[in-house]
Image (cartoon, rainbow over all chains, first blue to last red; front, side, top):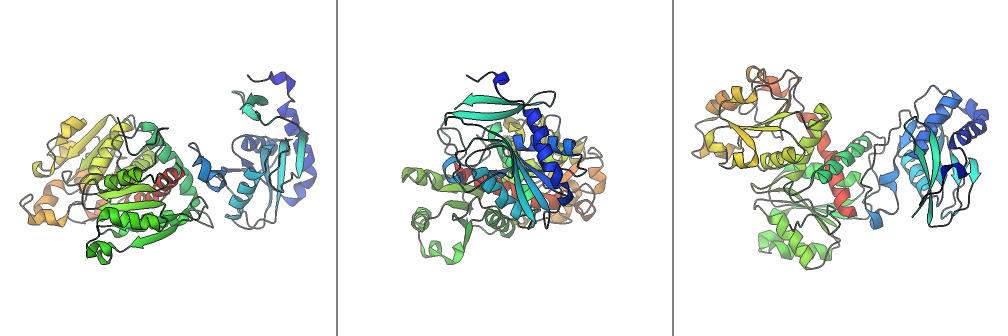
Amino acid sequence: MSQHPDALPDAEAQCRQLADLIRPQLHKKPALVGIFSGGAWIAERLRELLDLPEEIGMIDVSFYRDDFAEKGLHPQCRPTVIPFDVEGRHLILVDDVLYTGRTTRAAINELFDYGRPAAVELAVLADRGGRELPVASTYGIWEVTLSEAQNLVLDRNANGQLAWRLENV
Amino acid sequence: MYNPQLNKAGELIHLLSIEGLPQRILTQILDTAESFMEVSAREVKKVPLLRGKSVFNLFFENSTRTRTTFEIAAKRLSADVINLDINKSSTAKGETLLDTIDNLCAMHANLFVVRHASSGAPYLIAEHLQRIGRDDVHVVNAGDGRHAHPTQGLLDMYTIRHYKKDFSQLRVAIVGDILHSRVARSDIHALTTLGVPEVRAIGPETLLPKYMDKLGVHVFHDMEEGLRDCDVVIMLRLQNERMTGALLPSAGEYFRHYGLTPQKLARAKPDAIVMHPGPMNRGVEIHSAVADGPQAVILPQVTFGIAVRMAVMSIVAGN
């Protein structure tokens, strides 16, 4: 059973709000790095909204997860692509949902294997609490409370539109 | 059918042979290897996946290249790698294979990479591990006798997919000593599983096994005929010891009939790729003009081999 999408906020509008939050920081020449898959879609959208000339980075944290011993390797991992030099750059890591903070930890570790960035910030559409690590977002739009049995999922439809969906786990 | 390579959930726990593996597993390995290709291009060529795990290279038969690429792959996964010099070890003092394994398990081994002159040795180890209840220890076959060399087969598939994108339209020729080649056997099973419609075996009658048509392979003794319109040409190494036996008249004669020259390669499609598992015998199975030519992808094969071995080790160690 998943909840009707109309009951959830408009993810596209949230992307525009997120872009507004980041816009004052553009003088730092930030580079965007989206975490697969939702974060990469949002980063792509932010790039359009902020009119950034540079390709975004995309990161798959499968090789850096801390639950490899329990869960093994994710059967569908994708190549991480960082099309710019990380050394000395101002990076904005983009994810759809911030929850335990473990994915963010893994992504930061992975980024540092490309070089030493000047700074790493975190931009998310949704923050559902439940942190297990000292991680906080720099830019966030929506604070939402969910039960542990629920999962907040970002979908991208055939027209490239982003929308939230709730699923029960 | 019972397959010691897969657990009850159908996940890969050992890599012993391509034979018997479903297409989804082969595709998963190739896809994962694609992600690892990128790791080798980074500033820090390491991911922390196998941190704290111990990989033992057990090479009962000599091989510098395969052992080295497994070692590099394990190190890029952050594992500790122990190379056992078997000739100087307890085996030389009379210890049995399974006693060696038990001792290494007592040293907290997590993964064995095994090369052995006897076909089936990696199976023996995998079954022993299951019998003693060590489902946390994994085996990867790095070549057993004439039987299988699955990581070479997989890196060949990776190479083909990299250059040709799609398996479903290809004509692939394997040339040379197929009878004694574990690489050829692994390649044939992998090509068939991945849906390659036409696999050809080219070589002298003395070096082709009798059962080729049972594997769905077309046999050619005339190389120019066999190479016609092929997309991929896989050359095999001619082992020198075959010359001394009665199987072949001489290296020169072999080269005349089955050596890959630019003239013979011209029979294949103009964009055909040429592969070789190495080490090459220039002037025996391959002409230098081909080995160093624009269609050769022999060195990329070596690079892909590291990513493929990283994928295999991380998948089995995680299951």
